[in-house]
Length: 195
Ligand code: ADP
Ligand code: 5GP
Image: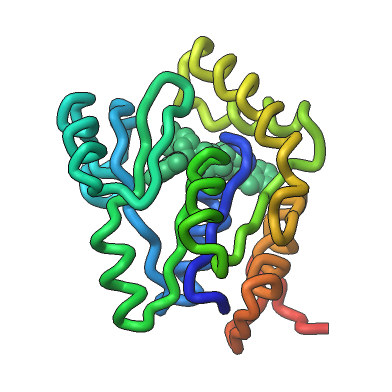
């Protein structure tokens, strides 16, 4: 796989779900933990899901050049801490960033060799069902996220590859193929017959 992979796609499309499955099967991949000014959702752990920062602290780190990229999304700031990414790349670990469109564009300029993958839903109505079904965001936040989703979906052609997350098991397998990962483990989704 490419040394650096960027995964982007509208909120609620299933990026987190896909990435969790990928990491479970390929523990050599290192997933960057972003910083954000968003409040933690129930169950999110500081330093694992995100580094949760106050806005001033975040802005101070921006000024100090501490982020590889950063952007505002649905009223909150998000950024990739630079040092940890550089350290893992220097160690030869494959690095994965799960970030929104503006951040992906910044990384395209600074790491043109990175593999940039866009995840999209089978249709917009399904995206809305997923984001509502997840039950983690207020109505206002869902509205902002869906509005932003239209902008992100219009940018899919900028990416090296596009993956439709319809059936989760199939999407996981496609993700592995696109990242040139091979695995001897049984197919995701629990199917017992290899076919
Ligand atoms: P994102 O990280 O892109 O915001 P999540 O991974 O949180 O999205 O997924 C949003 C919701 O959609 C979750 O409730 C998740 O379980 C569900 N989901 C993810 N992938 C699929 C899929 N292929 N089919 C149906 N539901 C899915
Ligand atoms: P959420 O609030 O749902 O966790 O994330 C909202 C959006 O922010 C998602 O599209 C997610 O990919 C993106 N995001 C998460 N971390 C970063 C980051 O470090 N930089 C950028 N630019 N976007 C991020």
